[in-house]
Length: 85
Image (cartoon, rainbow, N blue to C red; front, side, top):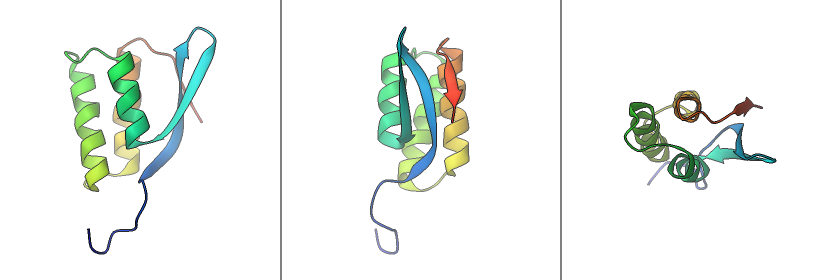
């Protein structure tokens, strides 16, 4: 896309509990999307909101803080422990 910087759009990092003993940190739409698919129920409205935000973020139509907030809400709704960095 003309005028857009190359490279992935990023957010302030978010760490979530992937397993009992391991946290994973994400900071881009790809990492957030993967985490949503692995950790959340697709029927959950918070998941659908976050998935839509990730797509919009990748397209440049929502702010990093908005997609980050939606992502954290979806994980929290799924019962995943989130540690904000």
